[in-house]
Length: 209
Image 1 (tube, rainbow, N blue to C red):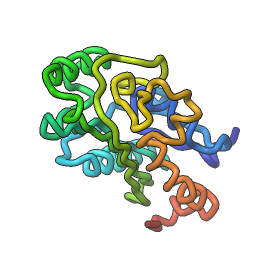
Image 2 (cartoon, one colour; image 1 turned 90 degrees about the vertical axis):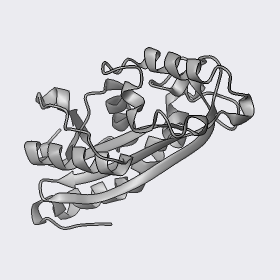
Image 3 (cartoon, one colour; image 1 turned 90 degrees about the horizontal axis):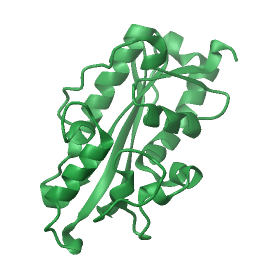
């Protein structure tokens, strides 16, 4: 494969990278921060959108590549929006998925089912070394279950219950890539990515919204 459609996904999370590989057209070659030996950009923004922009701009500048970055998380109403921006490191800095889920379930142990509403949110940004090209947001409504179910996905997927009563982890990968918050945001940006490469937008510093 040539480098013409080589895209950097600004993550060291293998589960997230796998989803982007499945979401983008097959003629795009995906590389990650791990592949290039680049550090994870600082995430000190006050919102998902700010963090996604920071990651995209920093990774594009350091790599010189068209870059996709996202910031995503689980927002639980009964916990005032937690874990929110800290979803990946809710139980500590190591970002261990099982520990994050256990902590959340423990905090909600006495919360009635009717008050366990939550939503997944993802903000995805495309950037070049010249700056941000486009961004999109995807949101999926649901609730937090009382036990883990399903063998697919990662993160909070096994305890996030969709309106059809299945957890996100009970969806097969094909269906998840139709319905997930990351999928909903990414689909909005695929036409932008195609135009970027078709028109060599990255070299001109143009902006598409």
